[in-house]
Length: 418
Image 1: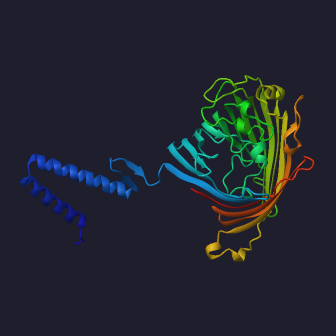
Image 2: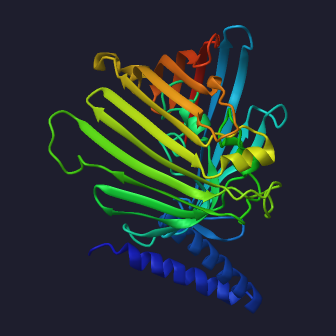
Image 3: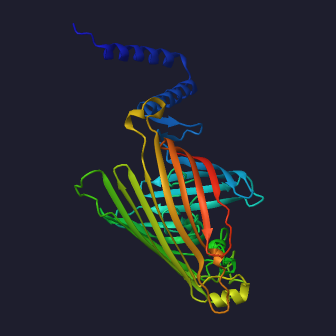
């Protein structure tokens, strides 16, 4: 006779239930049934790979929260003095998936280790994506200006050198956040785009040396004089069979908006009717072990003379900058074993030119010290794909006759976790 364990189990359970029924009151039976249902529910949840929290809420093993961040620390040595160690930034990411088509992303940054002496805590990004389709989705909140390379890809493992390129500091003021809404998508395999309507800049913060950098409003951004911005990226090598391993991206981007804004709304203190426009282009070409990147950006103030009259800050009518850099992976594959299996060594060189007074309005005297250039030579040692050690030397110059610009030597480390 074939052994039927299900019948035996059912018989045993039936005897147990009948025995308990004979002895228990109605209240006892109800309590026992409730406990049995709770235990069964927990067992089923465990079998499904689910968890039950203290409040009885079931969640999937795959959390809807995402956590991450990055950080970088630098030692800067300057000819003539001013050497320092700087825990430059610590950034924490937090995301949440409300649904497979509604996603929150955020980024909070602490600069220079504390909120005095130039440090601050800043909400750098906070936006919600409504993922409607590949060709068209919607983004609302605080986003990064889509100009150049580094502003949207500013984690320390993603760019060459200890400090961000100077073009990405004084021409494109990285990190440049803006509040607004827009659309983005990938309508073709070789094409992506994004476009936003956003809060504008504050012309009262512009100056001859740092360009529009201090015109960024970091708190409650005014909407009196808004702006529009966007970019398009082309990937001409997608789906093409090319010799060697090659990848090319070409991007064009732009910005146009008013500058008569103030924090918490309202016009700027000088009430100047000026617009700032910027056009930029960038590319990255990877072939085998070589990486080549470049950026060019041109900005214009429509009424720099009025800005200077109102704020006495020697604003340039035009600002202009560009850089070209190249790096090559030199670490032999035979070295990539054990603790160094994810490692890579990439020496690089970069030439930059940037002029925040490329053209000045009538009545403003151009300061040739603002027409600057540098050659940066260094190395990125990727201990892993998410942890990098860096070293570089920056040889500085400008067009001011007799000027002696101090060179810089930098050491750094950075990481990203996610």
